[in-house]
Image 1 (tube, rainbow, N blue to C red):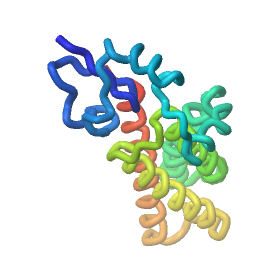
Image 2 (tube, helix red, strand yellow; image 1 turned 180 degrees about the vertical axis):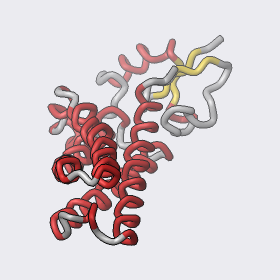
Image 3 (cartoon, rainbow, N blue to C red; image 1 turned 45 degrees about the vertical axis):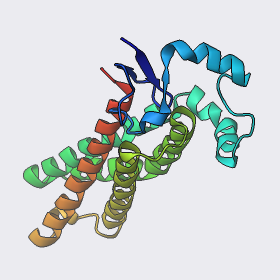
Length: 203
């Protein structure tokens, strides 16, 4: 049985031919190489299989490699994935218990996530360039859309907290909209994290 490796994400496929699309990152069959042929391909190119001419995107990715070396994206993305749901929990407790302390905790955590989102997006962009060769496939499109939605909604929530710090004691209608925005934002970061997990944990 032949083994084929996806050049973008490293997924290994066993079969007489590569799959039509990679089940992990979604690239086409042309991005698969026969595992036995990889050393020969690297020797032929002289640069581990990379073409001699490099695009502007490739040069940019090389300059930003230090971000990947310190695991910038896995570290920064844990902030929205972990802190935003916690902020939502504090919001619910503030409403249920009528607690100003819980409302303050929810507000401060939301501000923290709002500041962290641009860092998570930037490091994700660098990670996409360096680890996945900037290939535009469904998993990356979903992650980009979710990241953009989460960033906008968290910014709206943070501004709303600034304008109306007593939102937990406000009208039912305003509070309902506020909670819905939180739910959508949490869903967006959760879905982005799910696709990120699929890319990293391939088993």
